[in-house]
Image (cartoon, rainbow, N blue to C red; front, side, top):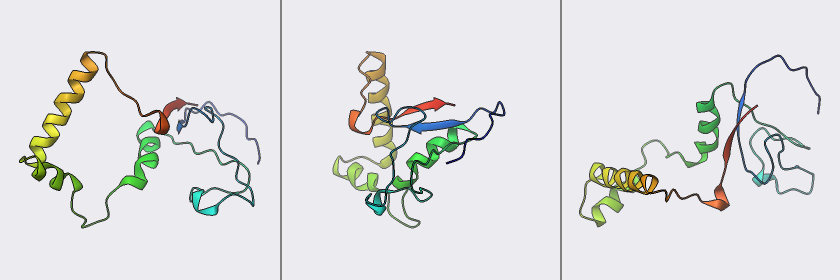
Length: 117
């Protein structure tokens, strides 16, 4: 690892709170390689982005659908007798109500936070 001088740039990172804003899991020769990120190397790899949207996109990329894949929400909506659009409207409305009433939920196991570095 090499430290470089700070140039006054603002960068963004999405980090698991258990590792801290500027920390990352250590990769060793004994680490399971399939759990590494695509650019990880031995030691610690810190991913930063120039834009907040890019940091979020990087974290969400494993969840994108394959080109040509069916939308999994279609079958969920059909099971409820709704169209996909109707289901999305109901979910958005429910989330809005939950946040309005102060019941915003977080999945602690997958909790991440945006860090301005």
